[in-house]
Length: 131
Image (cartoon, rainbow, N blue to C red):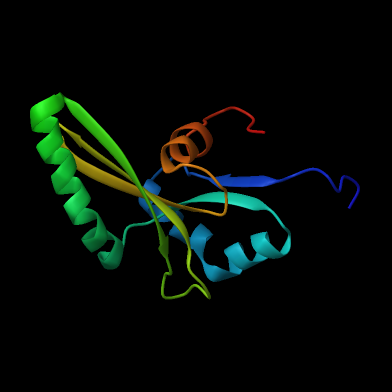
């Protein structure tokens, strides 16, 4: 109210364990952020639907890693609606293959932009102010 032109960005990435932050992505939290006109970028826990979506991307990264080097990282952006959500939202998958295996992480956001930039420069921006 005092600063009507200030944009607020809520970024949730708990340090302890990525898999435990999905309660921050529940409909009540996202609806509140939307009602308050806040931007958000939140870690999204993997479920069976997301894991199935990611499987071809993980296989693709693994194939490319064998050809191009020790690590391959790709980003995929799509619309998705969790069962508890009232609408589809923008989700970004970060898919990676290394010599130690394959990994996928998901985030949900209302920010505009490319998945790679949003994931690496905004979501993973540890200890810095974004804006």
